[in-house]
Image (cartoon, rainbow, N blue to C red):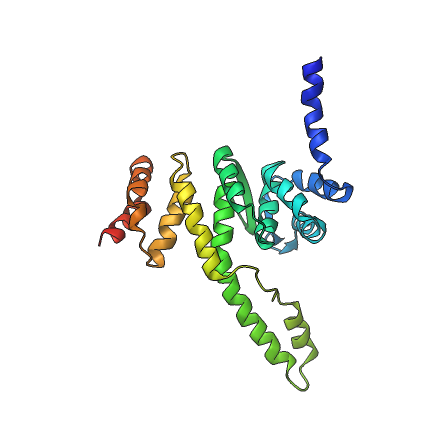
Length: 240
């Protein structure tokens, strides 16, 4: 009975690390079976799950975000990790290490496309695509400034540019590249890393024509393990 009581109390004590409001949002978020983008389905309906994510992002403290990213179900962890990265919290290595160790699967829905993935894959890819987002937001800010500088811009056009997401990233492209290299080392040092994640690493460097000959032996291990054509192509690219 004593052992049962201790085990039973663990989740109750854990939730005490979150404020009442954030705890409520997180529990609701944990009911979802998938990570969703802001608008989903063929009709582009607003995602209630994503709205919970935005509320947590707006109201949670850094400590609460770190806790969410490391605890709970895979969906709450995935959203917590996105917030942690957005805020540039110093927990990124801890997150990828935990996600690689637990190898948790996750379902994602971007628009009307649903797919199966892993937490580690989602975190790595989210960070990788941030470089593209940085470039896009620079263009959006320039476009927004040009419209707002007009003497009499049309109201519809002005409303449109005011809706554009122009929030500046806390990360530079150089910092993201450095973080990805750090992640590469952890991923390639783990023989249990998923095929999809290792292939994404190989593919991203292959199509950007970046050679990492220091990865050769470790990638060769995964090429043999998974019989991967993508990894093989990148190995050949590094050899030439």
